[in-house]
Length: 479
Image 1 (cartoon, helix red, strand yellow):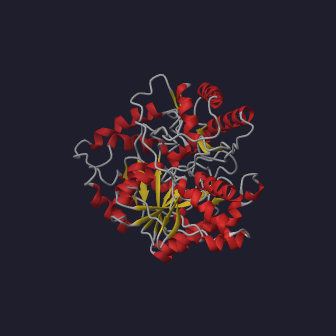
Image 2 (image 1 turned 180 degrees about the vertical axis):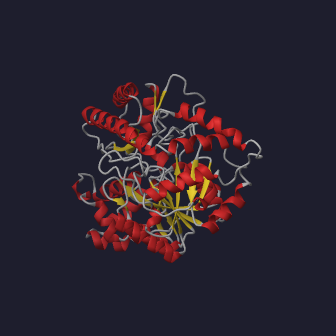
Image 3 (image 1 turned 30 degrees about the vertical axis):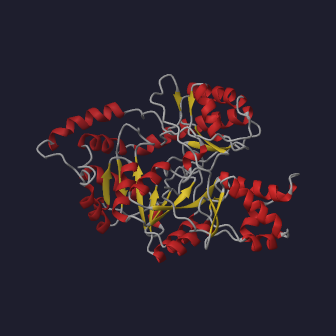
């Protein structure tokens, strides 16, 4: 059974009409043209799964077409599995059932780009040696550390202060990476059956963590061009009063969007009114490529929010260190609840990260240069090889969210695997699939790997028919 809250959001006839745009331009019969355009909006994720469509009467009046046209279009969508009609609830967007493809047991010989990650930063080995030299001072302690060593908590708090948010070490809980932080917050803040607002597309492991705590996910659309659908987000907050909303406001994964300051203020005010805790995933916040190098203000600087961070993107994924910044009462609850899942963060890794945070601005500057070269190489290569694709050039982050022009993302990733390349298909980033017209392409890898990936994509694209999405997407672990 899908753990999803149907009917949380309604799209009005007027709003749907704007999304439908030039649907009449098709040479197909009117009802098929209308059904195809709505189906495209579902596949693109612009109509999230669970959205309630307008009534047939309202939509035909707004579009100026016959009731028969809309009725036939909705029937076609039901037949294709993109709409469910539920008595008393209207017509709800959904996706056709998919069978699962087992995850490959080995990736030997394959170039794995399912992970948006960087190689280890220079100096980690030296920092580890210095940290090991300091370890003796901690050996009389039992070593089980559910909150974090003071030296690292203070270093993390200092980063927040440098970014303009007054923070004390007592507001920091050190975790086993950002994923652990999300899961811990979900376990403390969510009860089984609660709703949780998430982004669509969004970070799939956040979906897993929230579902693991028993949440019913309510998605809100995010796009490359327009960012967050604020009207839908506000409506969702008002209608569901969820205990949590998980957002990635800076260089959003996978679209690369950044939430404007005025929108952050409005969202946090609306969330506070409903008693919703905004979990702001800021793991990408300092991964800027273009523009100002000053670190952005954290989400919590504009209102009530809990921040998540980690060094997995900036320093190295092999350092499993993340953190939560929260007010003291929540920190106490998190520490008390933690023992149910783990007994603390390794001390040596904390000392290594504390060493590296002392020179973090230099690290970020070097990372920006690496990512700028990688982004420009990937964007230029994709635009040259695939003129019909929409290839954004994001100002930060580690990936570009590519529009393929056809719902073939899963089919393309399967073809790419035959060419020796692993990529995460667009549906991986949807709550219940969708996004078959999109592909996330990392630009954080070495030039040789980038060139190999581009060649594999060109070969794979030649084998895609460009019409039908496959029944079974390749599942992948993504970060």
